[in-house]
Image 1 (tube, rainbow, N blue to C red):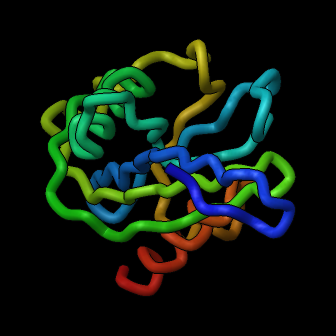
Image 2: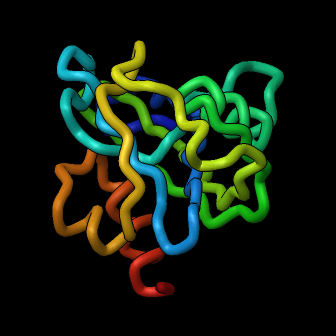
Length: 149
């Protein structure tokens, strides 16, 4: 299931998905709660782990609904990124999807929620310039989107 790294321990691969949820020229960004174990107080695109037996597309539609209250449909796969965490001996394989809203943007759930403290609609360039981002994959996706806008 995993590859071996220099110390001989098997690398754990964790499959996850991120969503680019758009409203015109803006994308939805979520700020993690301060008590988040991994990236407290930082901003990310909606997403999460893919459950066993679930496709990446199914996972992203479920995660967006759970995290935001919005219904989306996947329109395109934007890329696959590997995000290694050598100290934890794991690598996240993250599939990024473009989505279309099936809900109105105004139906965004109230915050704070169980996982997030705040949500904002922002241009990708604005998010890059103003927010502390939760990981390199989020930064890379926003950079690609800001060039395309």
